[in-house]
Length: 287
Image (cartoon, rainbow, N blue to C red; front, top):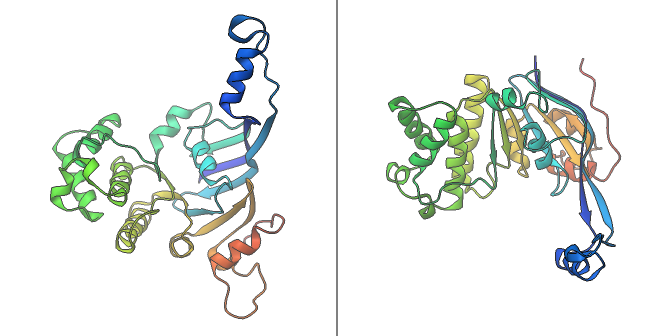
């Protein structure tokens, strides 16, 4: 069974060509501003396509990576799958549930970690995670035991588990965000640059947990990252995106065969840099 099916998904954003204060000034001075007319703006509006007719599928139990430069559409794609945004065209299904028509069913099956995770900073990791657990119907001594177990596994000291979040570094707060997502045991875990800002040791601890979730619990994981070594080590398949389009999709080893070898063996970094300069490359057919 496919965990995710994305079929010709499109997401666009419309941006005005002038800053808000100029639009407000025009609104107030033109006939109609402040109730004296229609208040129409003459500012131009541009359309930015963040996800451009994207199609792919992720198998159940797979770690699927999405690589690409900033602004390529990676985070928008995750938000579409997470039901945080609606596609303008196309369809997205998670374990057979449409993200638009069956968003509640999808939300019960997923969890998401992003680089901008937020918390109640005056509360401790324990208090934040217990609050999040209750939203999923989890509570009691067993949940508290799991919170301690997960946070300890991610490298938090016991005293830090009960100290205010505002006293923790951003890297440590990111670990708490990952723990919060793991607590609900999602079938699909969406990780949007989860190790950004972590020191090397913390990054390895998080990567070990990701691998353990996948191998021991069968969790399907969609991962966006700028860390090419991380993607190479963790992902079964990888899509490289540029300007909202998939320009290549294959296994890490398969991607490295898509560019000619001149000298040292290609790395995912050199492949990504090279392929984002070119036209879309079709996914390799499986034998």
